[in-house]
Image (cartoon, rainbow, N blue to C red; front, side):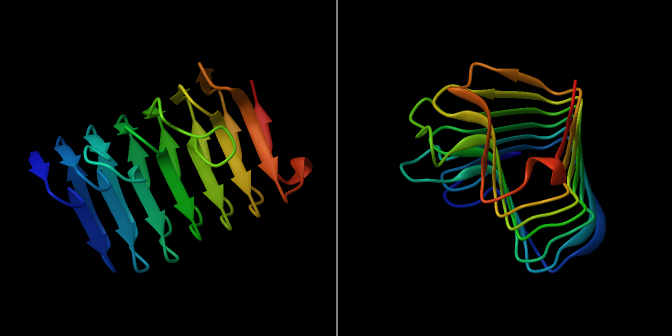
Length: 171
């Protein structure tokens, strides 16, 4: 618990584990998961990114990180994306509150942004975005969104270079 002058929680090439009940405030990203990190459960955490100036994330999952689970977290960014999944597969997000900041750009930022990512599952989340789309997907496929609440976005869902039939949206 506390504030970091960089990324508050950083996991690089970790296999398995539990990150639970933390308050992670970063001047960069709240949580950064990379380098093939797999099988980590994130439960009941609050993560704030971009407390300083810059384009950072509440949670940033990239570099082939997969099979991570996010349950009942609050993931926020003051300036950019609440959750960014870039080259991530089979990550699961259930019951989270995800938001991005008021200075987000409508076409590049989002509450949730997927890039070159597949087979991720978002269920029963509240995705709140005040300056952009709630969900944006670019070069991504076979992701599933079920029973999410999309609030206050410039647009609900934005798909760039993907196929709608390859991404499922329910309710």
